Image (cartoon, rainbow, N blue to C red; front, side, top):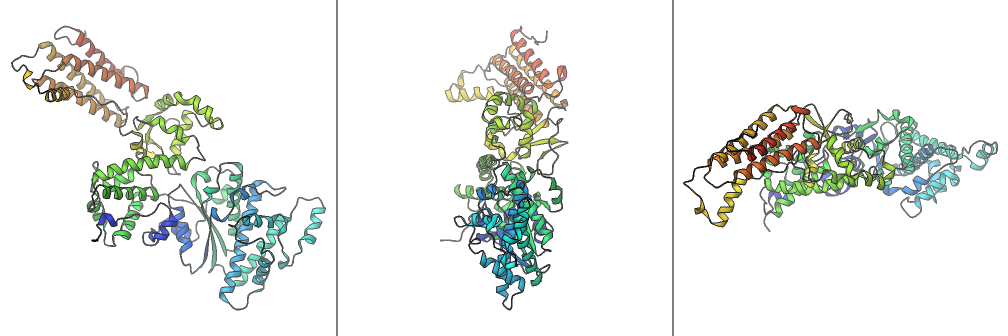
Length: 636
């Protein structure tokens, strides 16, 4: 077998960080962003971002690195039992506080296990605190097996509710707690048991001199697998955040917890202590330059270190796609996150090979891959927000085979057709299922952008929410191909009747039926002249219709110019053209555009000055011209 071509060797990675690490791309193709450095250095402990932005990549990379300043352990949904966590309660304590004690307990046990193992690795005589921890683990060995085994985590939870032995710390639980229970106070035992364990762990860290040179980092990831958007799920995550904050202050820096959390989950939380976490928050956002650099790093990891950006975007890939620089085209058609771009580029490479293009990716390969990728992302968007917005999949058809530019009026009109069905099928979400509520949701999930100034803004977690006065919205280019929304207003394309006439005659072979010597009738000539004047009037109106979105004006202009070209060719050609039919169909077309503009709220100025009004006037005049006498202007 010969050497593989550059396109065949090209590879951008896996969809998930775990397999990327196994393939080696999280080593050779990893980009150490500011977000990664902030977490690695300990400056940030709460990493927030959408699915696919690289939270798990940071987590897995940190967990795999040999850390001279301490150890790293990964805690994921696979390590714990979600139903048991959600159902966990303690008498007399609110849900958030009970879940906070639970997470603190999990962290303390993990730390105790680490300290015992760490001391044994170093050899020598263990400190008294470590001896106590070792005795504690031995006394509770029935509790602290592998939590992933059947019933394993359930046994862990029993420790807080009564079966935890603390004699290793010099405490006889029954005697020490009995007096307070008999006195009628709320049961203090879970919190007291936990404090005794935490103090023993802290003493172990202190005696071993761990902080600040040597720390244990616990990385908590994949919480979305435990999330159900209910009160228990809220308490579970709030309790985790409270426990993380407590750990950061209690262990003197020897134990740190870093939580990786999806932004839709974090933004849905409401709790009084939320202001404590602002300094720890880190929201992952990717700039275009960072994404381009990431792509180049991954391409080099598969093709070779000598690959340059110029070679990638002018040799391996075409220099432009649809008139845009290729990198800009790809970035504009994907959500700004690594996973999307990795999937998109891999599909371009796969399509090129399937089309027999092994030396370079062609523009046609990217165009075909764009449609497939768009279909994936539309489906992925619905799945991503299935818990938070279960009705999202039912909203998508409202935008199918329509323009990518949407106004409030247009959305309100479409929503009115399905409002009753949506309220019937999703009764718990009727307050969100309104035109304004739908706009808010679709903007927050990145499906819609809003026009602000001269640009379109898509939500990134930090943007201003949609304001009541904002009226023009755009589908994200990522989803347009799948929805058939590739033009601003999706106007019906005007048919070229002169060209159709030529084709019909060529197909029939009746080329000699033309009356070459005939002089064009005056009435027919004037009809086409009248049509040309109407087109020029509309084009002039378009040039000054500043309140109509630019994309819509351009789309109408393209179609009106096609009508004008037909009229000009009809006047100059010696073909037999049905002038009356051409003018009437153009009039009908202008009327249809006017109706569409009014329905979707795209007509700009209202009343006599609106673009829709001028289109209607020109349509009416053309109809009258066909019905009038020879040379009639239709304006009488």
